[in-house]
Image 1 (cartoon, rainbow, N blue to C red):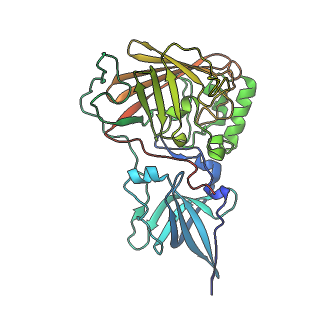
Image 2 (image 1 turned 90 degrees about the horizontal axis):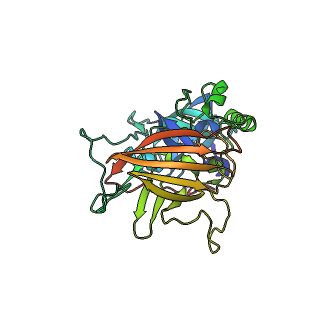
Image 3 (image 1 turned 60 degrees about the vertical axis):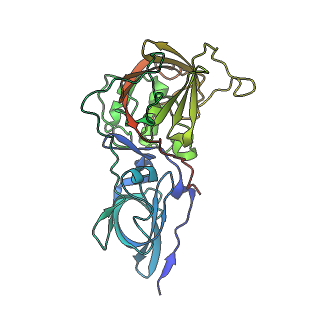
Length: 376
């Protein structure tokens, strides 16, 4: 009689992570190469025992025969947010279904595999395949919506439909005008290109190379669900909303990633200091942000960052001297241009600029996402 070896539910299995880039889009919540080894490809055949449909990643548990023993394997897949938007749900596979899985094995030798393809044996149909793409743009550009006072609405306007910004044109932080190639995990294809990415000081360049060489395994957003502070908050397909509170002269930045963290941009002319009854003058993951309007562009100055997070998907370093000038311009109803000047004299030799665009996803609520849901 064959004996089933139960798969251990450990932090290494259900740990939280950072980001996957697929076809230029940020999908998974951790760099796949940090946990799984592309050099170890494998194919498994077995019977489904459970489907864990929770963030940060869906897991399908499968009994696989190995000689006289049945071993329980964990198949890691995209987030339920991504899979649901691709037409799948928790019932697309059920306990008892026979499947074939092809993918790459976990680096630590545990019975885990990243499911590149999952095929139902009975039908030959591929299941849980992500197909998450930006909505089609209108054939004719639509003007940016405006508030009754004539100012541009950065998010939902009065009487307009709900929506959010997503599908960034860049998912890796690299200085404008620099031509270097990254893989889907924000890892450089050529490690010698590290010095081109940004004007790094020698110590920061060494740290960036170290993080890259370790396949981003030390990313605190992966290890400890740390927030995606700095420009990173705008490089995830989980999106964000800009909620304008005109009465109180502030804008809430609501994030689809990072456990629905939020950030406040104040436009009331206050000083960039904390509140004694709140954050005082402690450095923050999102810093302290003061905004002003320059025509139709929102200009935001942010300082007061801590060093407990990575401010880019690829592991570029920063220090508590980091300051940013961000510019948000809604050029039409469906396009938001984001420009940021990064000034960190502790890590970089000079200020440098990055820019990209995001697309409006109208008529939808921003998907809920909590990165620690199935951590054990």
